[in-house]
Image 1 (cartoon, rainbow, N blue to C red):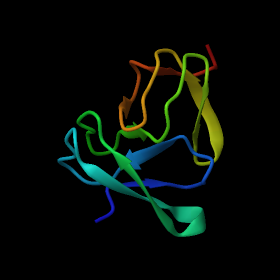
Image 2 (image 1 turned 180 degrees about the vertical axis):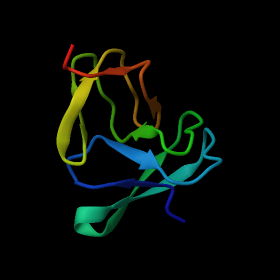
Image 3 (image 1 turned 135 degrees about the vertical axis):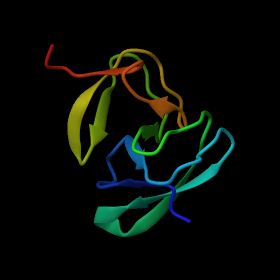
Image 4 (image 1 turned 45 degrees about the horizontal axis):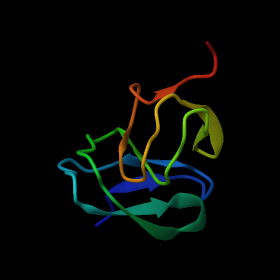
Length: 93
């Protein structure tokens, strides 16, 4: 089962595409541009449509989604954690 998708191998987050991802789930994520699967264990519940971190990231790191810079980390994120407004902000303001 595919749990999440990402577009580019340099993406640091993937989007959950199924409901019911709970902490401890061994997730499969499809890298669309390369048609390959990667794995990450969910450390937290991930709501459908929300982002999951694919690697550990520190405050100030850049978040990549769709192969582009979508913002910066404002609180440390571990691979498998929910990545959302509590730990990511846009660089626009």
